[in-house]
Length: 412
Ligand code: SF4
Image 1: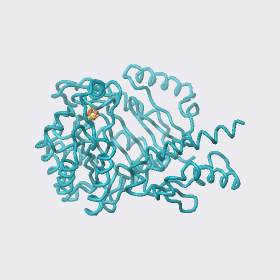
Image 2: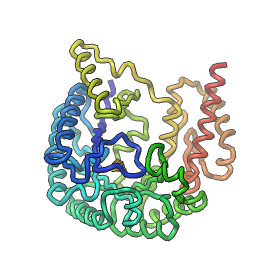
Image 3: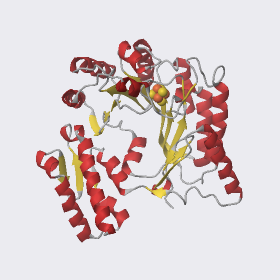
Image 4: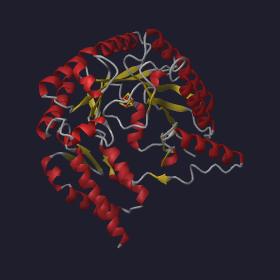
């Protein structure tokens, strides 16, 4: 059996909820910490559950990538991170050179805790910077200031230069309220001047139930229009290319050798383990999520433990295979795009069906193909950078209409 070689561990705690965030996180207050003081009991009892969750999983293959995300995992103390990794290592084993990433927020760690994280085995960090502008950070509801961010970058960059840290990513958000080309260029120049080997640049999205959605409904959010948003994306791609970064996925840019190996597992459709409240796992190409609330997660663990005692653990068998459309959506985000022949194996198409269906897809994509926003190379289709990537949503919608048409014809 082909066991997953990657694991995601979810830490659902944050100091406070940011105004744009709809993740299932538990805000513990600005002074919360993992080892003692406010919030520490919640964190400790959650970690106990996480250990139990890991223990329930078949041992399988040693891990090649591990990602501790959240939430704000840097709320944990370095010894808690170390214990978590020890538990994971003793259960699965780690491959030589495994990539072990920790998401980390400015103002939630200092030099000593950073050293502790590295001693515990973390070798890649993903820093939730979001913006270097204090006014913007305040509007986003972030806890950190630009000064905190610059200090965090200095500490991380020192560890990177000394070789203790293999790689790190700086995450920014674009298309923010009142953003213009000049202010965004300033952000990018600042980011480039810090020299992180990896940048993740996400678009702001307005999610239901957030402060931003409420402001939007009252007409209090002035977001960049389509043209400005396109210009912001174009300039991003251009400036980062000039700085030596390759855009290997719609939102991700890396210097040579620094693409995230863990994220590529998600985008390639390979398997991974997922542990923790609300975490999605995808062992053997089948995907399922653990319950999103603490109480339901606790109940789920008890049921799984009982099932394990009776030797009838059923979580894997009852889950759904990843739908073909989902494989296409995540695959098309990558620079190399999707190989329709490879992906369609799950559908059992023969060569004739494959050719007919690809011809149909090319009819749905006639305009973007003509415009050069999508390119074809054999069975592979990929978005061009920046034009295709910037209008990826429209292209994906046309692709989903193709998938719908195929479902219709197969049910006729
Ligand atoms: S720190 Fe991240 S996960 Fe936590 S509330 Fe803010 S955006 Fe959401």
